Figure (cartoon, rainbow, N blue to C red):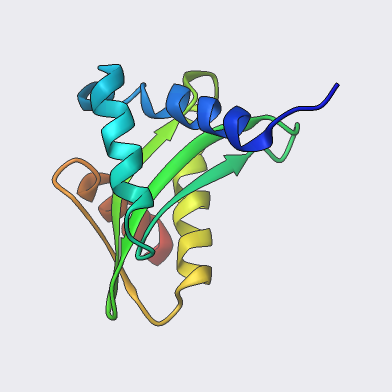
Length: 120
């Protein structure tokens, strides 16, 4: 059977993003995805579990000359409390080693905990 990966990944992405309270409404969710797609400095990344091939998280970032703004991070509830958000931020740091990772009002606590965890 042929599978349209773009559509399948889009459905997975929408499902994961819908865990974010502000993105529960489908029209709001679609407009947010379109917002990311409208500018090459905005990216949505999918995260695959190391134990399986399941896609278990999505992260949305906005990249500028000096920083990476972590706008959204959503992890499948079955995989929460496993430190996956730190793994994801570590990978973001590897992708942009010369940029500072910062958060929005919603994601700043995660970034702060990640920074604290790194310094321990």
